Length: 287
Image 1 (cartoon, one colour):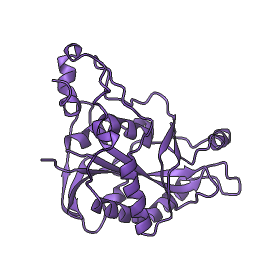
Image 2 (tube, helix red, strand yellow):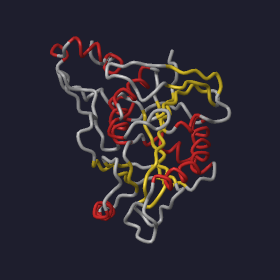
Image 3 (tube, helix red, strand yellow):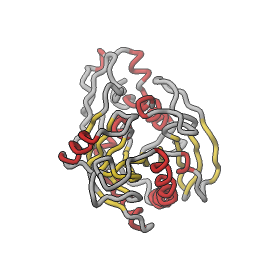
Image 4 (cartoon, one colour):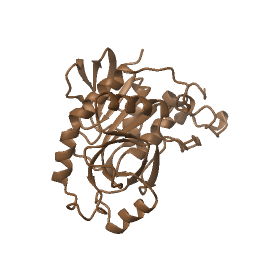
């Protein structure tokens, strides 16, 4: 039996919510090293959930330092089938304002050198990623946002940049010319690895500022971002609670069987140590 079917990843404020019961912390080691911190398990709206602070308690880990593989693999070991993500983003559109929430449906990758796959080392796999977010889970997030009265937008392109510096003005104008909607530093690798782990993944992009293209606004500062993010935290918690009520659902989406036709290497040629290491992911396909 799964320890938790629903995973939630974001700031520590997400699991400081009323109604979370039977709380325990769980340390998990994975073949890819240690996750960002301990998983906080509890019961919310009658469902078992597992929370993970993305940047560690106290926000100690830079986006480029995150062990994305360990974070997602840890959720898989707990039995998670749905991941709700929340993260701060900047707006690239005039009509997307600070304190708004976007549920994106596409990515543009501007990261460099981050590890974005569980595979390699003798096992090749290529999962479909044309639709990088789970559409069904994203719908649930959006419906929940509307229900709690959030100013929430369904659909949009998330530019995932390397950071930790914010964009140059030229970069910001370039992303706008591409038609992108928001910009952040974390979610792309999570989404790729969740797909490889056959976990449904959707994001609440919490808008904290206009990116630097918006010349009538003051330059973005960490203090300003944190202030807005704290204001958004309560809304995010309400959306999480409402979404949890709508889960689980029958998983007929592509996420649930993403590896079925993705494993290219013939089973007899897969090294035994790789089979063992990745058994939580590939065990039903490769013996």
